Length: 162
Image 1 (cartoon, rainbow, N blue to C red):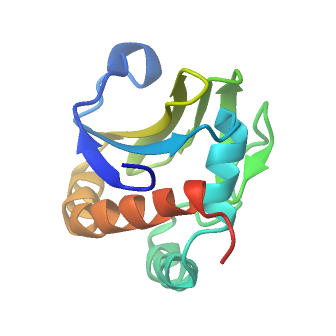
Image 2 (image 1 turned 180 degrees about the vertical axis):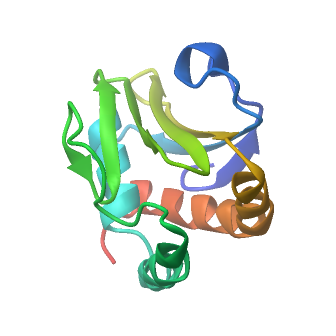
């Protein structure tokens, strides 16, 4: 059904995207005949998502800054620029890979657009590789929120207006 977000089995080659990833999940939404490429899907998710996610991001930045972790917009310039706080590492019209490496963990999001002209879908896969105890603790704490945030953000792919 168009606009319904479902958790799916990840189909990304995790070794090629983020070798050693210990966490991987994926969500898919059917977008019907919408002419959306991977960058547009990612932009809609990140920049037009629910406002409460922006508030959570600000809170996260406040909480992690004393630990020396990266906050929104920090880090080296990305080859594909930024979409919100996500550095774009590579992209084609069908796939965009974004993410960064930090002291506690490395993460990637992969946005895939697939299907025929009238039956298209977008899959967002998240991969995380923890680097230490702080990373493992952080991942454990945010995983329940991650699933809620991912589902909510993906709703914006079909309905981009806030």
